[in-house]
Image (cartoon, rainbow, N blue to C red):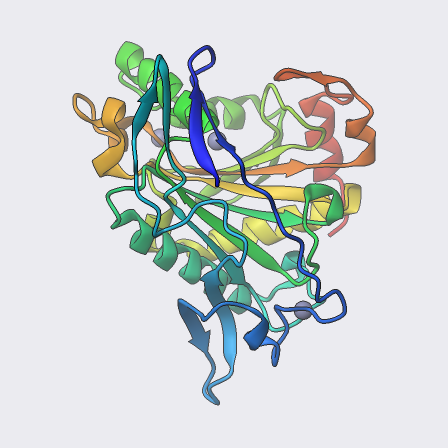
Length: 325
Ligand SMILES: [Zn+2]
Ligand SMILES: [Zn+2]
Ligand SMILES: [Zn+2]
């Protein structure tokens, strides 16, 4: 049985005892139309006028986190452990098996964003969940076995370590300067214009100063906003779709596998250390991270969080900018 355990030395939570069962229906894609019986019942579908689904969301058939597990917080001597309570959902983004996200129309991508927003808002209502992770793997190297375009949503009862770090660093910056760290990064990157890949009135895409992967790109709103799920409130969804599609086309020219991660604000009820004195809204700023995975980068040593990258972010930005898309 799987459970969550915390390593007191790194304070990192890990899931132990989870074994993934690979689906044995190799021939049939479970995400294709007419194969709906191969997946659990849908939580939410968006349909066309004829009643055909355009995008659907259902619980993962082999989830890492389970909604019906108890929180079961326990100590074992000095160690902490708890049940793997949470949620793990799959979003099938399109009826087409072969269409990659960079070739989606504005309308198709906008449905994906609607579904992301709905699911994040819904899962944030569950007070047991501290954080909602949303990610998408493209290409086999990035860990996707099923080619059909889809994303994962994972709701966790603990904060993922990278998010925890981003929150505490952003909070510290705010405490010292009374400014949002991400707003400061956006301003400086635009001013320096060395690592900007693409920009429009509301968003900027940059290769981050200390990129972990060759051609790593972040998309940040140029206005301060803490939650990705509030994107549609500002009325600039189409600018976001524009920059995302443009960027993915550029990235796909240089690498064939990548992971897209959305970093949004944590669930406010449960963000214990982050909400009592200073609201997360003040210092967190949502963004998208696109992390290419390719054979070239895998040749470089990555020992214990120490990333070694072959190409500088300035060179990466320049070659992404000059791709013809
Ligand atoms: Zn399919
Ligand atoms: Zn900001
Ligand atoms: Zn981030």
